[in-house]
Amino acid sequence: MSALAKLTVVEAKLFLRETGMAVLTIAFPALLLVVLGLIPALRRPDELFGGMRFVDVFMPSLIVLVLALLGVNTMPTRLAGYREKGILRRLSTTPVHPRNLLAAQLVLNGVVALVAIGLLMVVGHVAFDVPMPRHPLGFAAALLVGGGSMFALGTLAAATASTTRAVAAIAMPIYFVCMFLGGVFLPRYLLPDLVVTLGRYAPPGVQALQDAWTGGGPQVLQLVIMAAIAVAAAAGAARMFRWE
Image (spheres, rainbow, N blue to C red):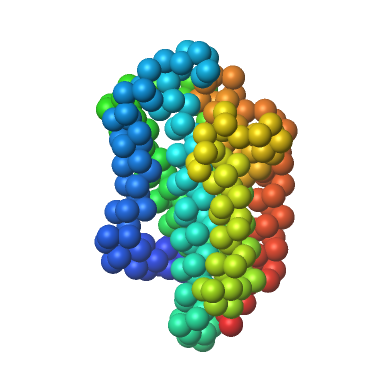
């Protein structure tokens, strides 16, 4: 087993050891959908959404919630906690390279995100007949690029902060902006036009996910912008990350 695989297994065990937090992280978006779906008015087709229901069009915003929660909240806080507790200093005495730790965190949180999104989609489809994405390849591309951009921003925040307080000061503004632009705090049809326009191109790409969900597929420009952000942030994180 390679060093990366061993490190990923260790990180997964540490994640699962915090059972309550692990379950909440994976199940919270699905539970939120259930709460919203129990409101009859949100299950009625509405011309405002092109004949779709609120629970249908809100699914991409719930996916934004998953990616933002893991990418720029949970993951950078965990890495900063490792540094604060001296865990990274002890790792520095081993042959483990910093890139392996970042890669292990990306793999673990990527898998958790896929599980949470899969659970969300299954619950939505079974409980409320929410349709699956009509453009599966476009949805996969939007999820890959959008999720990658969020995780890259999270690693950049973790690389530049020495404590959990410092990483919170860097990552939380990104988290709240992404949640706001993604229509999590307030449905996008209630947001100003400028905010909606910014949300079309900002990570993790709620409009790209929405377009894939309704069948048109994401725009190339949306994917290119998010991919550029992902590459730049990941390169910066790899360059700046230090054990101490």
